[in-house]
Length: 163
Image (cartoon, rainbow, N blue to C red):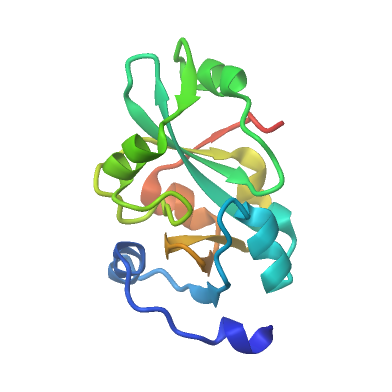
């Protein structure tokens, strides 16, 4: 397994964005499995699923897109999220809509280097972790970063919406 981590992945819009911003990151490659999600990536990489962060493209009642960053082992309470951000309602975008907003295939969505600028919300507990693994802009590819980057460079606002 450790050998697989060393495999280099070609640049993605996310890694280009991180490099331009001067962010130090590690690359973690795994075999992508349809609908495997963070359970599959954490198992293959031998890391706690709680520290693997999923990037979810959602929309409010006005169909305005937003990004939610959530622990891999948790779900988003759309009701609590809507309340936290002052929206009437929030729901996940359909995969083709999420892809249009982010520029990434579902399963490879990164909050970095998105096609469209969107507000970013992060589950507060994510920011307390020493390091997180988050999608690097391609299926089967995560980057390890300091979670403070999410607030510092994406302007991510902490919310409490985990279930």
